[in-house]
Length: 252
Image 1 (tube, rainbow, N blue to C red):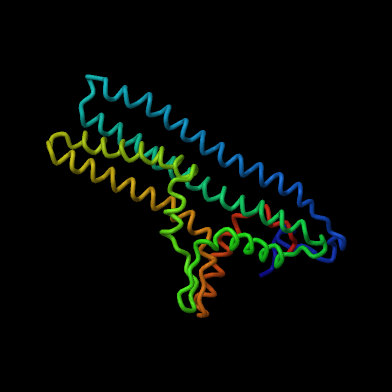
Image 2: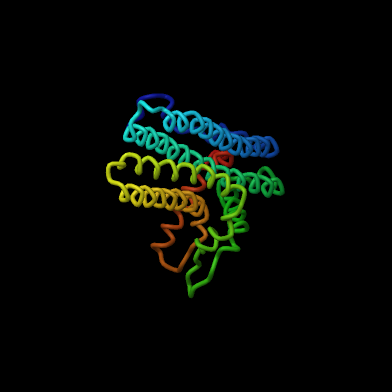
């Protein structure tokens, strides 16, 4: 297909500087700064949600004019906001993990000559750092190499990162469960059962989202001898590597 605009044309590799110099130290500083920023954003979300709950919950519980059904609706809305905040927090957690791998990769790349740096070396170094960090969760099963997901969850369940997420997760699950119970106040007994059930389900789903997202970063480590798995492994790696945009400084 013919290109319609000049900016659609491919880059002219013949105009590249033969003696390319990559400021890996500068890139590392930016990556490390972004790594810290993800943690700061996460803390801000928790603070905002705490402030929102501290304002709306006493209002909903203390206002006599408002009926129980409306109070339940308010709690559900706050709970939905908590779910959205939880999803954002998980996103920050995923990128923090990838940026940490970026920093490790950039540290290793500084040992290579600048003229040796290309896409293949950068990706191999990234995978090397990924394997180094995740090898403790790998298990050989015949010709297969499996990432032990439950072991990862068990080892990280009491980490500071996880506990930060559990704070917002517990609040969100409780508020959603309470909202359901208040909405169904006309069905005494059953409303409490449904409220507790929905709260527990919300907690489990959010926990699964958190650990599932973190584990996806390490899925490229899984392998077996089949060609189908090689394609799957390649897709998993490219999906993770695409988020490591600090490492995309090469031309091709």
